[in-house]
Image 1 (cartoon, helix red, strand yellow):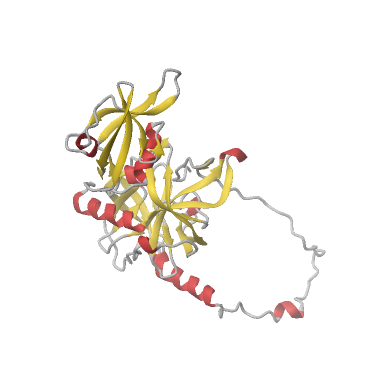
Image 2 (cartoon, rainbow, N blue to C red):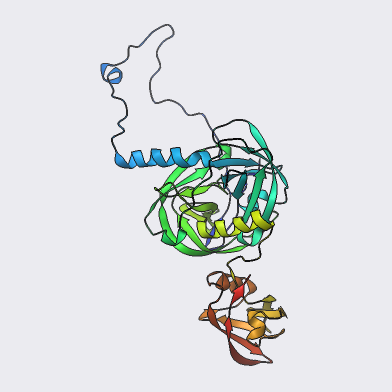
Length: 359
């Protein structure tokens, strides 16, 4: 079965899915002849029970008990992923690439083996988020608590919860390795190739099937939705251990609230110039900027005097050579930010000051 996953181009790394296989291994212990018996050693029979006095272990067990009931497994016709119970009405937030083009789903709660029917509420692929809803929500649903992702800091301990490789209710641990990452998913049948800003990087293992699951702090709060895991292209696509990315909680709640209320997103919280564009190629067929195709009336570009045919070569201090580099630069900025746009018009270099709008 194809498990929900996504890919990322970032400094030689690509995010992709992994597969697992099982194999039989020989035991290192010697076998006894048929009919013989071996008595347990005194030291083995007297082994003490595992100690639970370690405070960090206690914290892990407490967080898992608190949050894991809020993490579900989502099955579609093409694969599986994870999701997070958002409210007692049966709304579940997940990745848009887990949902794909499906509109009906089979959901299994963490404390049950019974599959429940669910339908699509809304999907917003530009932020790789979606909401589905249980058709007949059972009593006792436990919504997750979402953290203030602005307080997520480097080095904080994290637990990743979900269904990697179909292994439901699995937990891995790590730390917050970085914040504010901007990453890009490749275009696929389930993803338009979204560029995602302000991502949380974690060393907690994230595998196919973890997508849509919870990245949790030791206060039993969701700080992000597990979305991407990296592999190293220079190592023939082998796993790059400890490099995963999660969409921050502020983005999750902002998008999910709009999808639940309106079935669509009118304010993404993502910066936009208010244009459509494509990669511009120079006379020697090298990418040399992003050429504006259309300008939205009243948008940031229009208000700054930009026109169709202008070739954007720099946004602030960031060099722009392709449409992808323009999208990545915008993803790292916020609506309302003021930025200088460097562009070419009729072969002449010009600049314009723009106040970014919202995608």
